[in-house]
Image (cartoon, rainbow, N blue to C red):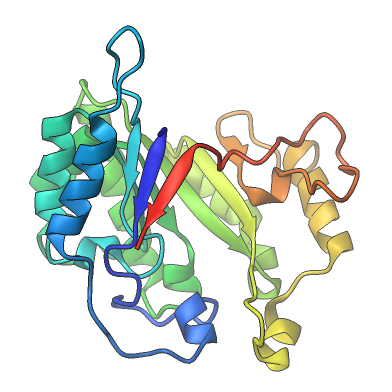
Length: 260
């Protein structure tokens, strides 16, 4: 198993972004989190798998991709368990870095223990977090990454493509290049079944608009020589021919397990 995703605390967050799946479903209360024993058992199970040469097959552990994983009450235990088993953590956060997680000393721990740290732009776009504070946190994390010479973690941004942030990309890319961001994941907004039609009309981009964005990012005014672009915007739909033939990739989500 290449990596596992643990749904540690999928409905616990300190922000309220309109495009969050839980918000789309109308869930605003906190109903619980994964017992640490469950997370520990899953990691130990897959960390025991080795190839013929004895190398660890499990490469990454991903804490909850919904909610804010840094609010998981056992996150520190999870971080230390990954370090002890030799497995890197792949972290996606909203960028608020609550509590001690925003201090440089603890950010040093994060960049040491993680293979990648992705910071979502939704925090300041619709979550109520100030853009300048969000950027300060990202810059502080990048500085810790630069000073921690033994770290191989990449610092990435995760952009949810929607109708209300179309005019922000050029400024975001310029800032990211200056700050030292290494990668940006561009993901079209996803709307779950039975989502409010008003929400889709407000945020959803058309197929043509997404194709135009793909072109601008790969070959046009939004192209960057300093930052690697990835994300579901560039994945091939198996039912369609890719309009940017040769520039898109097959789905990378293989050989992995989600633990509820």
